[in-house]
Amino acid sequence: MQEFSKNYVIKTLGVKEDNVTILKDATAGEMSQNISLISKLVEKTDSAELIFYYAGHGLPDENTKIPYLIPVDVNGSDLSSAIKLSEVYEQFGNCGAKRVTVFLDACFSGSGREAGLLAARAVKIKPKEDILSGNIVVFSASSGEQTALPYKEEKHGIFTYFLLKKLKETKGNITYNELSEYIKTNVSINSLKVNKTEQDPKVNMSKDVEEIWKGWKFY
Image 1 (cartoon, rainbow, N blue to C red):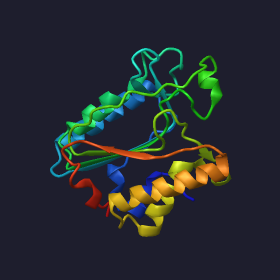
Image 2 (cartoon, rainbow, N blue to C red):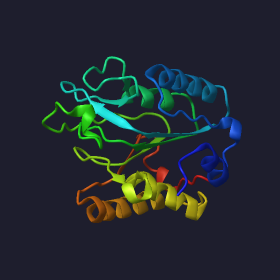
Image 3 (tube, rainbow, N blue to C red):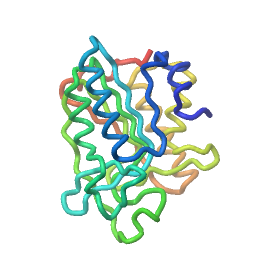
């Protein structure tokens, strides 16, 4: 299975090469700068569609339960430089995009795949749900206090594996509802088989699109 890479989104989803940005092992500064830059580019483009994919660490603040993306240069014990997920949603949701699709292969309960990031934490935290605005739909790898787990045999997160599998099979000619149901079913079942642990993906959307998102297609 291919990585969710530049070539993948170009060949499978038909995205133009100069419209694709890939960041690997990104720092907080790199992530913030690129999120801001992409939002500004979308603002200046008529009928733009935005796809944001993130695979990595996520953490909630222990007191506020607000979820954060954790760049490579941020320590899990100090979230002051981390990327607040609600601010990512706000920037993308308010940039005027015709459609914003977010894929998150990360969990925000404090029970990530690699214990080293949170070795001091004894309990999981149910992260605060963000209120979404604009034309945005978010596909998340897990629900509530669950962990987003790997599919080691396939060298992917189990969420990413089934996401890419279905997009490749359909070449993006699939409705968001069909993709959602496929991911939910296959990740839920195979997580129990492979990892012996429940993982139930979920989809959130803004009120602006809750009546129409199911019929959207990628290509």
